[in-house]
Length: 134
View: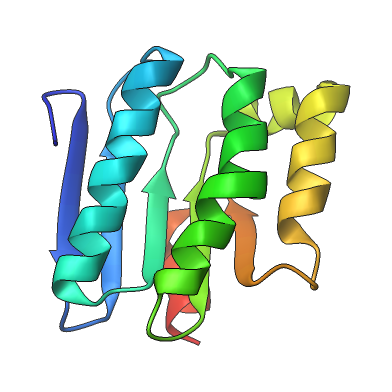
């Protein structure tokens, strides 16, 4: 369920679901957040997701593996169309992604064209929304 540090905003008019994290959270809480994201996506039939993680500067390696290898593929199977995920991250977070071999592996795996979902990283929200709507 959404909390003070996690919000979900369905935009069925655009076919977008926006998830924002205001701060870091432990891995089990993030898993609960993602479960709420999926439930809301199903409720509103929105399969273009903007994940705003700019304020989460701590990266749990197990979350990267869980989302790209398990959660996103399972969500893609439930989607009524192609699941598209735009991750809105800060420049500092992007540097962490680029400097961590584990995170690089998860990103490369997640953005590969053979995935049953499409995933892209953005440092600006406008281009992320444009990509989601394309």
